[in-house]
Length: 469
Image (cartoon, rainbow, N blue to C red; front, side, top):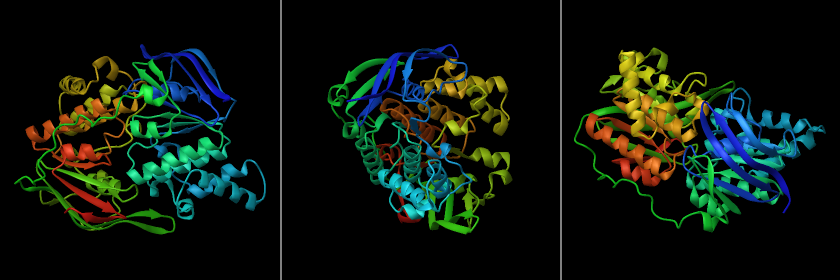
């Protein structure tokens, strides 16, 4: 099988730390190579090296060989980061297709072919929408189509199935398999052992930036076993007062042509110290619901009540105490951090800004909680670019908790974590519930995590609550 791209003896040092050390891989035409390993093992650093992208100020040794500029496409874990928020998906894809010239019909045909290869259902609907109006799975496949139109011969897919419901995940698996059948090399970075078994031709296991195993998938991956999550809680509602509630909530996205309904008559409540899991297919409205609670999405009617008091719709209209009371942990932690400031400073600042805590005391508290989740002080003194997505996710969780919220909205926060780190994060949240009476709105596709942490589950489908109250 022909080699399309190679990494040989790659070593990357940044901010006094070795991110990868001696990593080698070969991407072959029509084959899928999986990079595995826990958060911070060097998967993303290795994958982005194929694009010639490294942390600022990094020292790089080794050899990287690709077919040339534009030959490597990148599908990030959070695809909205590479889509223009001001342009509809159709306009973006048609502009890319037009770079090769041709008639309008030829350009349209190229776009349609790319969308077919990306396994995108209902493409006409998707092409009319802006990125924020698409689900994560739809965004993923638009980015795959974009890479195909740009003529990529290698596609680096960084946790492409993370945070997706089973149907959407299977669609992305089929899309990547279809891409490989076209003779394109795929480098898959993933924590999802089931997806790797289904897709990959070979696997490379990384740990602490080094290759510790490589070969056929069945020899590299351990025998499947049930995740070692905490014991599930009893599915009973605590006898406590309602902490946060919505009644017959309708929400929508605003567009230049009017509004697009997202939520329809949603009624639910969460008691003090309770965890409500919110599940449903990609695009069902889960994130919009969470953003309404946190004041990040103001296009809704009715009211969000905190301890019986109406909250202002917009984050900007909420007082400091209200901001501290309802905190939100984003699915994409990289977008939630300032890339120019050390992570520790940003985590500690929440306690200073929202609770008036002493700066030094806030830093000491931040260090203690970060270390409880496996992030040592030296690591968190670096800028966000030197941390992995999973490490930043844990830092984002601690940052929100330092506000000492009464309600914490968690949007797919375990999706970028390996099993051991996920278990630690869930145990940490369970402890805060028991100790502080923290209420959790836990948006997730991770059924095992929901069973371990939640008292009840609310299921959304097409913006409507179909199970749970």
